[in-house]
Amino acid sequence: MENSFYSLLPAVLMLILVLVTRKVLLSLGLGVLVGAILLHDFNLWLAAKEVGAVFLAIFIDENELNIGNIYLLSFLLLLGIITAFLSASGGSRAFGEWAIQKVQTRKGAQLLPIFLGIIIFIDDYFNSLAVGQVARPVTDRHKISRAKLAYFIDSTSAPITVISPISSWGAYIIGTIGAILAAEGITDYQPLEAFVRMIPMNLYAFAAILLVIIVAVFDFNIGSMKKHEDRAIKTGDLFDPEKGNIPGDLKDSIEVNANGKIHHLMIPIFTLIISTILAMIITGIREIKGNVTILAIFENTNVNLSLFIGGLLAVVIALFLFIIQRDQKATSFTVILEGIKAMLPAIYILILAWMIGSIIDSLGTGTFLAQLVNDTALNASYLPLLFFVVASFMALATGTSWGTFGIMLPIAGEVAAITDVELVLPALAAVLAGSVFGDHCSPISDTSILSSTGAGSNHIDHVVTQLPYAFIGAIASAVGYVVMGVSHHVVLSFATAIVVTIAIVLLLRVINKK
Image (cartoon, rainbow, N blue to C red; front, side, top):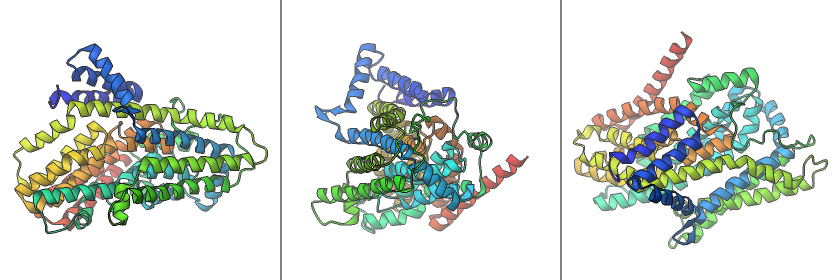
């Protein structure tokens, strides 16, 4: 079943079940089981052992603790505790009351997470979780649905980090590009220069960022997003009250201190941001063996460890501020317990997403899709479009942008170098763009899961509401890549993608008014 058409079945089944049932845990669980059964040729005993082994590997891999996963899961628990303390201390309410005086319109409240998402560009995980903590009190006050907040977070985090050289993504991509250029004997430009040249070729990233601005400024709500926004405005329900297990939702289980001040929120949040950034710099420097540069720091940084350190320090500060506060309405133990409970739904989803990702990797889904590219005899002009489409499917099926980068970038570089060396950078940029698009559509994407968590949104509601906007950006990007392949003109292809994006938005606005 490996490296064949059958390797697509678990991913396809999971995606269909998610869209039909809207039950993400059930869909992921069945996807894991079907994948394990296919992997072991319908031997149920071996399939059961595979599921157990994959689950165990999340925590212990090759007789050693999988410390990266443990750090990330621990950080999610710490984030839940931080959120609980911010709520119990009255800090979130005080910040919301202050912010609603400063940010007096829904438009301004929607632009806030977009602005934060663009300036916090160093890492997608950090972006997804930090932006939600700062923006949520403001967007809640202006009755902006949690699904919309999750969309703003998700559609700025990956698109901005994938075009930023000074980020964990940028450093990884530049390193990969360096290996590709060396392998193909391309010496016309260095890896960093190649990355910078590729920035305007990453059409989906710019289309996605443009779309979130359009959505915020013109209140462009389509599909399920319109239903969520209408309910939030009319009833004040920021998410579907009938759906349980909202990540980060405390469900009014903690009494809020009426005497809370803004500093009860701002000091822990600043502690989280500053300490995480410092930890990323320090862990990066410690791993560098040669010259210390900004790019080298982000290439070697330990993101999960840095998040854990930042989260732990923020919890300590939040706990201290809560303890010295007068008239506490809850005990510290109660707040910690409720914070942990609130974050468990996100952890369940993330663990199952990792499990199905591992099963899909063992089935060789990515390898099968990559082989299709090598076997395709296509006009060179359409290579950027081809790589955009294949990378999209691969990221959608596997739920990982980085995994898609690792598989598809070397293939794109080799095929383009043999076919037309002028298409090397456009082909590599198309892989990056397609990977982010597929990641935006995938319910098992860790970035999307963490965006839902940061926003306090039902995960499937976030995925479904984001899909129409992602497809608008993808259609515009596809047209742009056709132009890029035919004309070899970056500015023309970029302008085409932007114009097509705006044209689709205008067309949909006209249709919605009828």
